[in-house]
Length: 429
Image 1 (cartoon, helix red, strand yellow):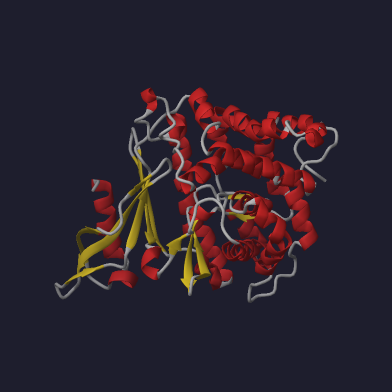
Image 2 (image 1 turned 30 degrees about the vertical axis):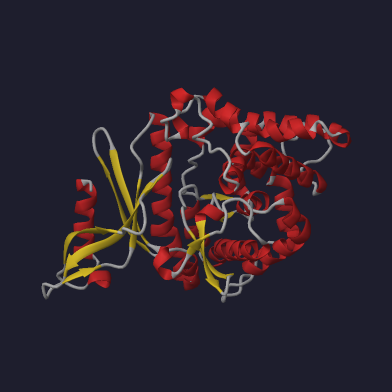
């Protein structure tokens, strides 16, 4: 284990009497042999317990923990984005959630316990660590699949999301000065990566468009959708910057999908939810989070059957706080927010949904589709744009393409994409 982490754990044991008691000393870290460490593009995680000696000399173990740290640095641009992500996550856990909890404590029920963090900058590098509760030891489990969930899971997701968003409206009501100071401090971390991946996102978006164009009844919409894809960067910047002036803007999770939540079950039914991975939290329209759930974790059959009910469930979550909130968006307002911003979720879905579909259907993975010369590359951020494009258009096969076409059709039917002049970028009325 890195010296930086070892020193952090030693100080953590000494300073957190609420967790360990007085005069305790860290003597090591016991890795969880039942869980493999997870390595990813955004973070590496290690599970285990701190071994410590109490004031009576007895060796004990801490509660089960997850240690989250950045992976080895890549390019300067990617490293900057990763560090911003960790700064964001630490800020949400360490400042925004405690601020919300000061107003109403039930917000903490939606997240794992946050034990602490540290960031240390050296002349040529930066070290960061986040220490969180290991939810598996509280009987929480990952979703049964990474792409499409059933109504029971989706209902709990949107209800929990509505409740989380409601804390922003409560804070605007009770302490607007501090709320906006916190919310506006979140880093717009998408900016460092937009330039590199914008062309890839546009081309992946055309995967669904090109197949939709084969259907004669949608021909009049093809130029409109193409215009939206050509203006992907403008749509991105609007979502992550201009929405700060939206009176309904909230602190968004930013990446609210099934891979960033865990469920607790009773007799096979999901009853409780915890959300995590707050690295791209931002201050924006609530549609940013809600649309991701509706267009990446719900398939078309589920949208057809339960769209109205899921909107109602989200609104129920908005109104679920024990303290009355006087100014909440109406159901009609939420629908208008979706109509004007949800095309963003198609752009995201065009890249990530095929990957999730491929994993669930046991199809060739992103890694397996890479050319031989890139087979050992573990970080997609380091791949050339043309490689990302070619792999992105293949992964998930015809099944993934069909789901992307379904999203475009649904957005047309719901007025998110309108057959009107494309001069007004991206958005329905």
